[in-house]
Structure formats: structure tokens, C-alpha cells
Image 1: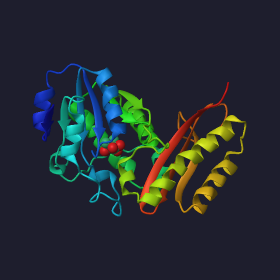
Image 2: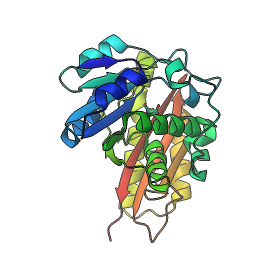
Image 3: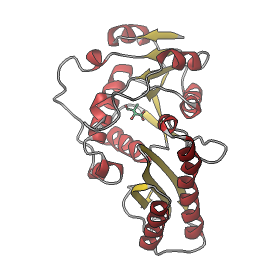
Length: 277
Ligand code: PAF
């Protein structure tokens, strides 16, 4: 496995590769990321993983400075799984102040975008840059960041990018908590409580499968329950998988999404629901 820090060196290394599969990350890798790398391995003969904490997608009061940077450990985890690790410096990715951005679709200002203005614009811009730099045949992103994956798919479709986007299932701890680099910020009590987010979504899923159609009430009940347990809820929302607009028939493939804070840690989760035809 080769560790490359500059765009020029990466381009030279990848020039003759015909079947590139790419996994963009911000590092601090856990089993969820490694699963995406394994999916990439099935999709291409050369697997590239990028590790870049993208300043453009963090708001001024967010955790950019404190985001865990663990390049050495990440490379050890990727041995035998990836062929190339691309870990550029901020100055290489942004040699001048970025003035050209991807303007994401309106859904980018809802759900996570409502609490994180500009986040998806910065995310989509760096993903487009990375896709242009690596030029993979396939790129793999986790479904845990469901809205991110949706926006990337729309960017790729609407800008006619020559890449296939593959979504990897969320990997969970034994108790059901979705793996995330931010889980390590949780104190012991918070970690014990954190699983309640996925349990709440699972409970909503069961209610929907049993015929509950009062979505407003389901959402409000979930927010009240989480709030009563000490969570600060950004949103709990039942949406269509296809467009992330509020769920409703005739669409039958829905997804329940949530973002909520425990102390200072913001956790995300989602669960898909397919209504019987
Ligand atoms: O999901 C992430 O880790 C990041 O948003 C991504 C896609 C690597 C872009 O910085």
C-alpha cells in the first residue's frame, strides 16, 4: 500500500490504472469505513482511499480543529485492503481561496442542512474535486450519511459525471449504535444512552409497518421521547428514499432519519422502511 500526499504524485501513480474504485473519507477509520473499502475491492482492481478533513464542510462553531486526525493508525488499518491512500494537505486541495462551489439541490438546506448551513455545499465541492483528481470508475459512500449520499448521487447524475456511486450499509456496534468517528466523544453514560437513537427509529419503523400513517404524530412522539431522555433533537423525519421529501403514497420506499445531540456530540442515524405493495 502506498501513501501519497500530493495531487501530482497521485495522478502519476494512477495514470495507467484502468479500474479504479474510490472511498473518500475524513479518516479516523472504523469498521464502517473498512466495510466500504471491502465493497470497493469488489468493484475495482485498484482501491484508493482518501483521508482529508475538509475545512469547507465545517461551520465556524463546529469541530474542524478537534476532529480526530489519526493517519498512522488509519494506514495500519488499510494495509491489505487499499492500494493507495491519498492524504493531501489543505494547501494542495485549496491552493487559492475556493471561489467556485457546487450549488447542491434545495434538499441540502433541510434535515442536516438546516442545522449546518453550507455543510453540503462544502461536502459536494470537495467530493467533486476528489472525483476529478482520482477519476474512479466507482466511488463508495456509507448510507449512514443518507442525505450526503443522496446529494452526491444527484450531483453525479445532474453533472453527468462518469462514475458509478455505490452505497454501503451502515455498520453497527453489537447494541445497534451506528458506528461513527464522533462516537468516541461520548462519555460512558452518553455511550449507554446513544443506542436509544437507533431503538427509537426501529420503533417508528415497526409502527409504520403495522399500519401507522400519522407521520406527524410519529415524528413528534419520537422527538418528545428523545428530549425527555436528555437529547437535543435536530430532527426526526420520515421521508421518501427517492427524493428525501416528506414521505407519502404512492411512494412506498421510505426512510426515517434523525440527528440529535447527546451533550456536545451530534449523532446521526436512519432506517429504511419498504411498505408492502
Ligand atoms: O463522509 C465523509 O467522511 C465526508 O463528508 C466526505 C464524503 C469524505 C467528504 O469530505
